[in-house]
Image (tube, rainbow, N blue to C red; front, side, top):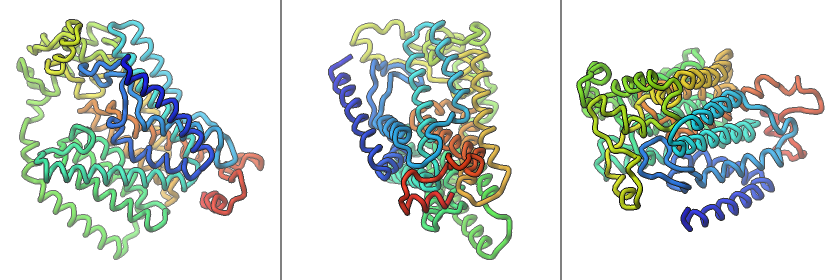
Length: 484
């Protein structure tokens, strides 16, 4: 560990302590820190430090990452538990956390039985981060007030990505913009995750200014999505946003809705016209047959990742080990498909480490399912599937009633966002990309809070544990409780 890492560790401890103190003494500061957490997740990699980093490793995690966003998360979580803003249970077990914990334990088992272990430990640390963000979302959100901060943070993040995307297209000449997420497919997946939440917020019983702001953020997200030219992302984006809108908007026909619908169609037509040629060129780069079923030697289409996953599962029932895909494919399985990759075991000296960045190593599988199968085997894939089923089941419970309560509609938005990220994960691994991973688990935590509130209404909790009653008789807090 270098001196800069020791300095960073000391600063992390000091900043975390200060953040917990400030967030505990001031609920408004706590809410603002939550806003910064939501909005800043897209730039978390610009504010992190990697301990014991293996920067040359082409896996999904190459070090023990700790970011300024993590400090904000721990501050909000600790303050919410130590000094709760409302009376009622200070702690409850968030939905799906047990499933994620079992998946983490299986990951520990995978690391113990595999070699090398260091890459798996890196990925285990990210799973722990995900569990922390679930706890943050579940502990912080109690009323519509906190949901407003969530929506504001998502709007700020989407507008930042839109501004960066326009800059990259106009001044950088990029054909496919990536915003702050380094790759267009990552930006596409992020937008598929958060856009349904904004669509739900636009139809929820929020103040008019917030609904209009959510609608503006949704428009920015749609325009930015077109700039990514993502072949899978664009239709998935349209599917989940339309699904959310169809569920959250009343079907009663009015002149206002007709006019608004025509305006949306006109805007969508303009977007398609502006992006039609480059988008069709993207779809024409390779056919489905070439992408998945062409087994020609040296063809690195998405089909080769499925074949590698099948080979690995045949040879290793428990997989290569968590986060060991790049290591195992580069060393062994790449050659079976005619690829020549470097060998991580030959990197020893400092000069070799510096040169490793220019060496060709295998990329993570362009399919979250194939990646999980190759690293964790059939048991790991089955367990990870159960985790996703639990997420879907939790979100689907909000589809039962059509009401404008934000606590219901944002649950619908998070459900469709989960569908969006799942569908794009069929062709991408970027679910594990830190900005997406953090935002997704934070939203799952918010979903868990909404799920708990729906199943434990105040009237069933008894007079001594009214869920949304403020701890101190302040008028503004009492008003927030009345809203719920």
